[in-house]
Length: 230
Image (cartoon, rainbow, N blue to C red):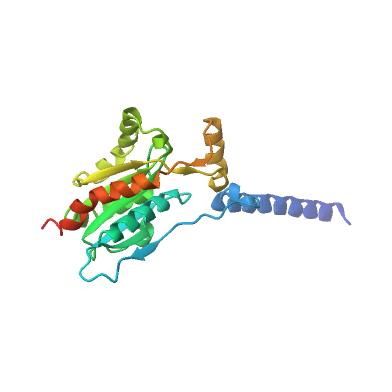
């Protein structure tokens, strides 16, 4: 093989390796570094409908945003309680809700990441704020800080909602539920897992579902009795 041919082949191989390496990196970034390893738990985002068979039942939407699925468990517990009290409830991921006009009340919840609600939850509230302003509304939060329910931790978690308040300043929710979530390293991205391990966070399901149900039951009179605000 001539020297110039060898040089062209070498350059082609190097170029192929560079392109292949770039494509592999893009794939990892797209799907998450953790997803590149085998055995990672599959995320489960729960949605359900209950109470639809009850005549004239007020329709309630529980819309939520989540990264690892634990916030959906809170939403499901709330739905079960409200359906037992006579409501017809839809639990949906915020990105799957396009129209909230069929509902008589709305609850919106989110996990906390980097000191605020997830962006899609805030965007949902901002997009629908005109309709939400006329409906009974409640917020809820899933945050590991609430593993210890103290006045200091409540103040800290409530401060995480400040970006939401700025995005939709005209909304005044009837209540804000503050709840602990769950931590499963197998469901975290490589970066999030590294951060949580560095903080010394311990894995576990810290959700107090009886407390979540009790909170939902406590909001039922305000959510179900008021059929809009005009």
